[in-house]
Picture 1 (cartoon, rainbow, N blue to C red):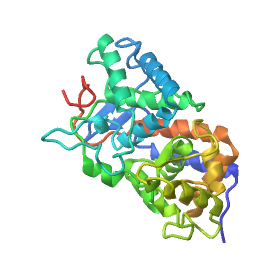
Picture 2: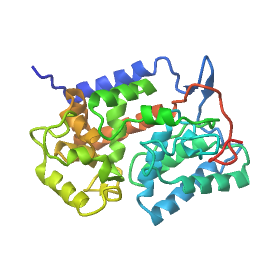
Picture 3: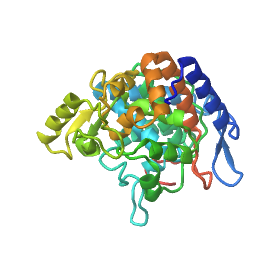
Picture 4: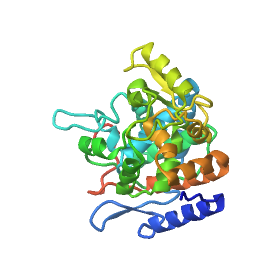
Length: 338
């Protein structure tokens, strides 16, 4: 017999999961290797670079005024960096080094590198060698949410920039757009996050666009192995996607992740999933592929305030992730090690 949870029960489960998941990770420590930690805290740059967050906000605000899609791009850039939240994704390839930019989840997907360069240059002119690129990415992601109408939160800072990157890790650890629920949960747990974090952070798809090639599996309109297109598939939505993608180059054509409020950070993404209008397979399976994720989707669709509060928590938790290895450095140029 199916189990159905009340909103009150779900809130209790969310809070218990958060407490359990953080029992070995204090509120301001990010694990980076064998017994080594980087201490994160609020106000790290209060004295050493007091203008840092204002500079980031100003640049993000201007970039979004010129290109509203930049908000989603900055958020995605931060997410894809948070295999370790160490700015490894920003490193360019060199004759002796292959970074993460050409990994399958990142190539022809990530944007905003030039904006991060501009922010870093501006900050370096005032506070050379003080603010890490990893912290800039994290602050910019928060600002992109706030400027799009979403929740705000204090960002813990003090991250170091990695000395290397791993294309293999990016390919293996970042969930693909055709992932089923089991794969999504497994990859999030491997990173140190939980099922509720996965459902919550997926809400970032309330903004942005995706190429037709990333949701091609949704276009057949029939049941598939992931469970995204179940017996109640929204055929009108699938038909609209087919028309978009068949009318142009599927490698270049872009579809809104949220057709209703594409540039606003809200809970519409979850409402869309209930209506069968999740763009990616990895979106729609949150409703069709698992009872627990379906219950969370319906909770967030019904109550935006709860979604916003949980999104704040999950973003802070994700921001504490650090890849195993050395403690890194403060890069002078975000694209290259010092």
